[in-house]
Amino acid sequence: MKDLLKKLVEAFGPAGNEGPIRDIIRKEVEGLVDEVKVDAMGNLIAIRKGQGPRVMIAAHMDEIGVIVTHIDEKGFVRFSNIGGISPFMLIGQRVVFANGTIGTFGMEKLDDMKDLKLSKMFIDIGAKDQDSAKEKVSIGDIGAFHREAHFQGDRVIAKSLDNRAGCAVLVKTLKELAGREIPNQVYAVFTVQEELGLRGARTAAYAVNPDIGFAVDVTGTGDTPEAPTMAVNLGDGPTIKVKDSVVLTHPHVRQFMSETAKKKGIPYQFEILERGGTDTGPIHLTREGVPSGAISVPTRYIHTPSEMADMNDMENAAKLFVAILEAKLDEVILQS
Image (tube, rainbow, N blue to C red; front, side, top):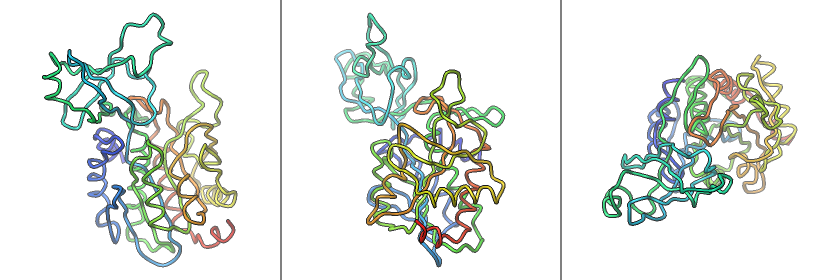
């Protein structure tokens, strides 16, 4: 999984520009499923046909980024956010645009750092003036963090683990299921524009019309010094979501997931995320409602250029997905 994860996290793919990520994933999953298609929104849908309930499993491809809003006379680039970005995480970091132009985030002089806002920041692309800057970037161009992945033991430090970690988990799941008979139809959906409001999952779920759905994403941890209270630790296993800002997991679905993990000897943790949500939100509200759950990869420093996760948590997340998809889900659906 390391090689795939490295390719995914280092590729360019902010919300609305998921093409490079989609191309990598498509090459990985073709031949593992019966059909691969891309919908009007840009979601990549890998379908494994068969009998039984339609199961949607989702991971978003996009990462946070910035969008050019203005270029001043000296060639400095003003920008706005694509997804949730803290200005305090940007100072001195590198940004790359789709055409390969690289810049550095700078800031205006402030009397008090507490006053730092994105509107007080700029991107320096080394341009001499406005005209030379416009040769490199244009209004509306979108950029992403520029950073290589680093593996240190079982840990990985990289940009965009949110949610390339989830994408890697889904690809691993499909590879493990290849050639096996399972009692479900699987729709693996690699979604777009999650960071802008869970958009891709909303339209994809409507089209798939699943009987049950699951998402995989990252979640925060409570294991760093003076971290917000959260019963999630890096390396203690993937989490089974109980609640976040957009979903309260149905108790029967949650129970099924935890019992499945126990039977297979897969370590897991329960997750209550007080802020934020995943593709499970729009999936469970599709049409007349869909029983849904979520598996998360514990991750430190989410929405920064240096997120950190544990490879064992990702491997175990894939194992749990395989076990879920090999189970007869009819009873879970009926109980929900």
